[in-house]
Image (cartoon, rainbow, N blue to C red; front, top):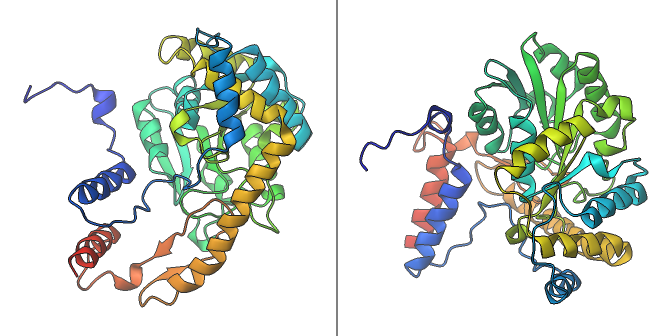
Length: 358
């Protein structure tokens, strides 16, 4: 159909530039070109074997049926116990909802909160999906510039950006794409400020455990209950356990917010795969093996970071700060823009085409 009538909600969205780049790399590989694809935030590690074994165990024991839309009782209890062990967080199972990856967790949270005309604060630089979630909900993304503070958000920046239309702020720390980490005290100040102004906080903790010393993991789930009334934590197994293809995540939020998200999910994905929930619950219950696996991956990411960033800064026109978390290198290429190239996208395309043709 040449003129398919795309809905206004979807027409307002932009396609994912990350996935467009990944598709370009995939097409080049199909033509026999040797391409290293650094576009998608995907660990190059395989899922730990013990987690695979737990999934097999779940299949063998017949965990192939529906679970509640909120996730199995075992899955939610394991999240509660894990956060108590790691962060001394006092949670309850009715604050937990399983989701099909961290991305659905974010969509569920936003779609149950936002109305047309609401404003959503998004610190820059940001993951490309954040503003599209807001647009899908007919809300308006409003961006907060952080470059003046070396790309780290502060409470003062947030306070200056809040208006009477502000409904939500999306925070991502460690950050995709910069790798910057908001200091714990500053993050608490930001959340306390938002709660005092009745602004909700959606904190994407996808890279929570990939923080390099002296930075350390801190979850907003550990805040007092009266503050967490305004907070939804979006968690994911994708990066932490190298499980991107398994599509499993969760939210931690006030029971009423969680109830709304479960209602929404009951009419969409229903729930994540049953035996995958079981495997993740078992992984969290076996905390020593879990810590060992995560620590091993984090140590390797740190080793790569310590080599890569200085090497990038040797390239003429490149400038890259040292990330404190995640596994990204956010390269400033503005020194190359204005002559031959008009944008960073043009530089990336030239690197692909020229490097592969030489």
